[in-house]
Length: 166
Image (tube, rainbow, N blue to C red; front, side, top):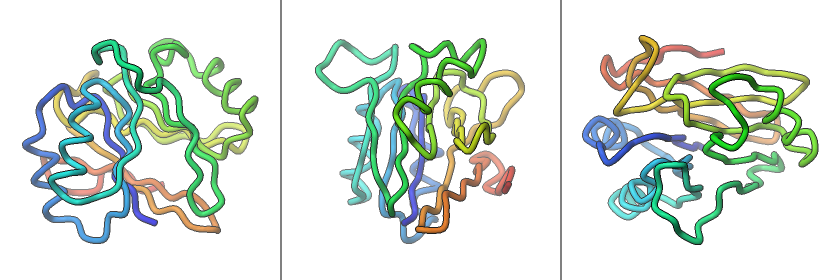
């Protein structure tokens, strides 16, 4: 299963569209909020299945803030991250992940890409394709998920190259 993980698009989709046109075989888009409607738009445009959560900049809706998805036997928590203080620390979000028994947590909010593993839980923040912060590039993540694991890569949309492949 191949998943494009996107967050914090804030209505600016030019680079994401360009990259999605180049990529082949994407099974899902996971949009992690802050203009979650952008995820809906991209999923329709590219005819790709979608899972999404709302972020702190999404208008009040009945959409979920947290969602657990299971892909190839792996449990993944999708969240924007703002309710877990991710701009300051990761202990709170990791505790939630442990409580839920997930294999990975995909979150946004900081606009800074990161891939890290803590106590057997993968943390993935795809960064922002529109408003990067702290000197980061405009990024999304491309994640391969199979029975053997979850394998994320960060894609730099400005250079159209892989930034990091752990």
